[in-house]
Length: 390
Image (cartoon, rainbow, N blue to C red; front, side, top):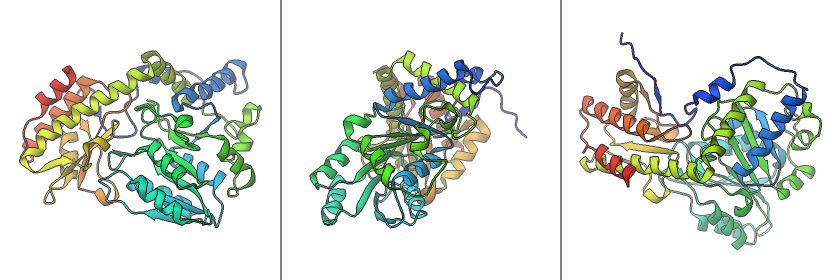
């Protein structure tokens, strides 16, 4: 039995590594739920999320993961019999479609090969064909964590406008918020879904929906039966309704510290750091790919995510072997493949509390693992270093 010393390199795309400051912020006793200090902290946390979403509208927080925030978005807006368009983005786009089917909505999925970004023209064509405007909303994942591919949200909104269609645009930003520039109001997003455990550098357990005026108006007259998820109930000035009961105090303590850290660094600098780390990873993978056994899952590198990179392996290989051995021998925990990509990819996260040294260490451990597995590759560490310096 091997004993691994030192800090584990948690390179999974959620939960991401939690900063020491955030961990220490939770190391305190519970406080009075209705006390002035805690109520003010909670209100400030929710308000301080608005500039992260780049919205002036309300943000609602739930004791949930991203799937709970999905359900909040769906139940507030979508009713039984409503029509919804879901451009497939991969595992998580498909799962959001399944959740929407659970409220007995009619879900139309635009297929995708899980290696490409969605095509805004396809969305426009589908909406143009909907002459009766039955489609209530377009549900789109900004970055699908399973595929490592990001979608052009402004282009999709432009497609909806071009079709002259009134559909709401609902976006899952779970894997992108806090890692890349996201401009909810400017881009015309009506509902944004996110969660605490990725770019926001906090423990899993908080889900968020940021809501624009069109979606809020739709929720007042439609949606599905709901109580816990209801936006109207949570819009109350009564603090007890903000979480529909007892607030998750220690998650709020954590979020407060994480938001302070993001604002101290500055959001433009946060985005630049994530872009730099992603480019380092992609530079290494480009070198690895020259031997023919590995490559970027994304067909077009320009669509590859800045928060997570999916590395595709040759058909005769099993990516789970790489993930397992890298963890057992080098204490570097990679993400595995999901859904159609099970065994076909391993995933390197570069989101949240991550820096260049961490990425170089992870890339070095992966190269050592590839050697142990007798998988051919060309070394990419030098290319990663050059990107870091450049």
